[in-house]
Length: 132
Image 1 (cartoon, rainbow, N blue to C red):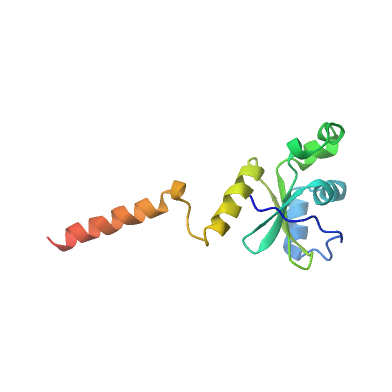
Image 2: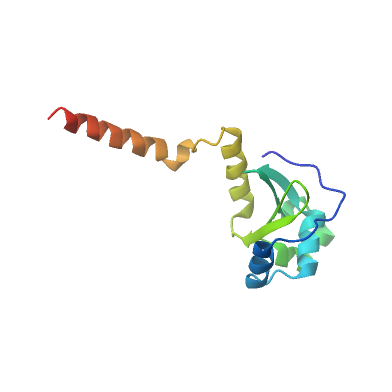
């Protein structure tokens, strides 16, 4: 997984989408601050994705209420440190790992998605029907 260095500056001016999603998902300001301060930053799909990996936290932080509340949140931050959006996924860390690998493969689908195999089957099916 491609990791980014933590930013020394605080994100500025959230987008309307960020405000809407954080309100809908009930992302409190102190939880957002915890994610931005202690989260892993991964560059993928043109933005920096920030999520907290509990295994990377110290024991004191890992057992905290904020760490539990931050679990599964992904915050997207632009290059100019603007809060773009946020969402929750039960599999946040594995999702970001897959997303960053997708980016490293030049944006092509992963082999494990089956897209390429499905295209091959469709193409083969058309070719076999074309001759009849």
